[in-house]
Length: 159
Image (cartoon, rainbow, N blue to C red; front, side):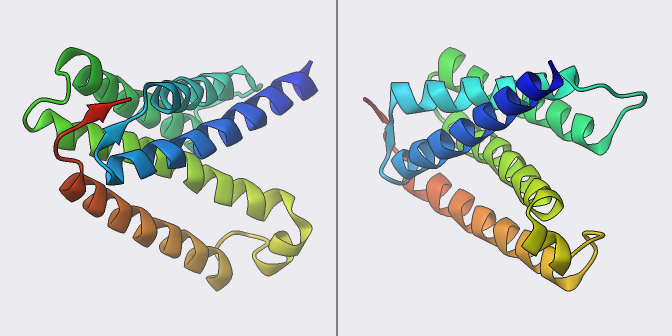
């Protein structure tokens, strides 16, 4: 059963990341694709929720990230559905949605360094310069993406 949960969790996470990048590309072009956005938000929420299905005895950093991601997704959904991206809610949506995507990618990098032998050899404790550099690059790219998307996402066309 744990294998099924693991495979479902990983597959959902990867679909969420891909859908998130497609949705982010739309933000850069001032469009919101209902399909990609719905897929991104749903799979990202599901990824966070399924993380709690793994056995645990105490609250872990992964749980804190999942809770934070879910909170961000609630705000993103509120901005999108209730506020219809009006006024400053457009920027709120961009920031919260892209922060949720970043957290998913952040965890992907951690998992890659834990599970991919070549990466594990580079950073066995995830405190080595290679790991820190990759996470810093990912963070910098997301900061840039979020700034650009916030600036460029002006008059949303919902596709």
